[in-house]
Length: 638
Image (tube, rainbow, N blue to C red; front, top):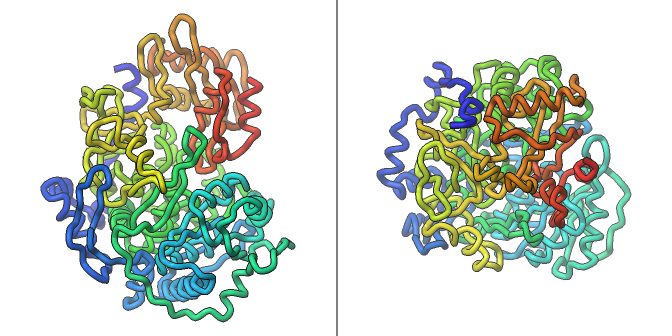
């Protein structure tokens, strides 16, 4: 089929030493989960602590599936208390590094101490089980401490990414009707101070549900404190007791709300439920990252996103892992900050986004080569499909051709990884997310819900429930049903395009609304972008469909060049020829524009809908998740 060659870049077996020591050593795990789905997840749940065991593993009240019904559990207890009776009590739980270079380590016992104290602080402010608490903090230890303190007393946390504006914060506070806001005087980003308290004050001009604001002193900036409402974290913690029993929660009680942008501009409040979520993130952390006691694990995401919730806080800590947390930007003060951190702490597992890897490629190999990265044994990617050439660079330059790569697919709504390699047994193809995790039934279907032939693009759907799935949308069950369960009968509709190759490997093609229809041929943006990125001059590319009077849709490409290349007419011709050669004439871009940066969300996803809207003269809609306004300006000027 056209474009097959961009996807076939060889196959990579796990190294024999990795295989021998891997947690998952046999393919039989897939059969075990298929044979007895409920038994498979019950066995995982048995590894955690329950105050009361469940009556039923799964209640199938479609689409409101409920896991471990009747069980009593606490997520904070499973991340902390259950390790205190073991040698892990004095093991590092969080190794934190601030952008200016300050650092701090918390053992499991110390983290338990701080979480219990802050749980008592929340109680003293009148926070009760079921109340909502909004957390708007930089990547500092107080962020996971606040989350685990909420979970401890049964309050529902809503973390709002520290890069969001006052308006975005206000919308999320008001939708959740939060009682308390936790923020900081500021945070550091590329050497500048992000004014979190100032944004909070602006948001609170119209957020009547907030009774108290707890402020962490991070930067030492002078900030106004409103008497009776605003309180310093350190003052409240001074006399708080470090004894706070964890509240036994119903397995089906909400653990947190996390808002994800809707195309309508109204953010969707995704609700995750306690028992299923902690079981799902616990087992995927263990199996996907082959997580062992001696690992130093670093997920570079911000905790303001689901990746940080699931794979910095809940999943790894439930496994008793040592987690690295970094506050700042990957290029501050220089392009090698990540590699400096890997070397400094002896990081063994690195989980990052393709967008970050593409930035590393743009900056050049000399930066990672300055550092000893030999401690790394496993690499991971998350957030969007990874171009095969980017995968190969990551494998060669960062992993020194000895680290398997787990290319993971999942969503805010899924709560846990659903499609992924298992690093001790999977033969990898660069750019493929491999197969569904054991117990997950994924299919690629047409618009009528029928499975499409192998090699053909279609809609990715999930055909069976999974433990960490969203429970509903906050205060909007009808939208939950409509958004995720109305397109294909009995299936969860992901909104992503995919194809399955002849070996059963899944290839993700990006959002369905990013498909371009050229003269009746459906092309995934991912395919054309991968072809462009496979050219030696290109660091990053984004393509969108534009109206074309003959073909219906044409292709506009926005290209970021590597440092050593400059735009020219010859290069434009060469790039067009390259795409023709790799995919075929049908995929030749009609326009190529050179930009310094692409419009992206703050979690690194390319915002193609904004580029499409600009090209077609439409309203660009909700931009609360946009990282840099300058990127939009560049696209407008092209």
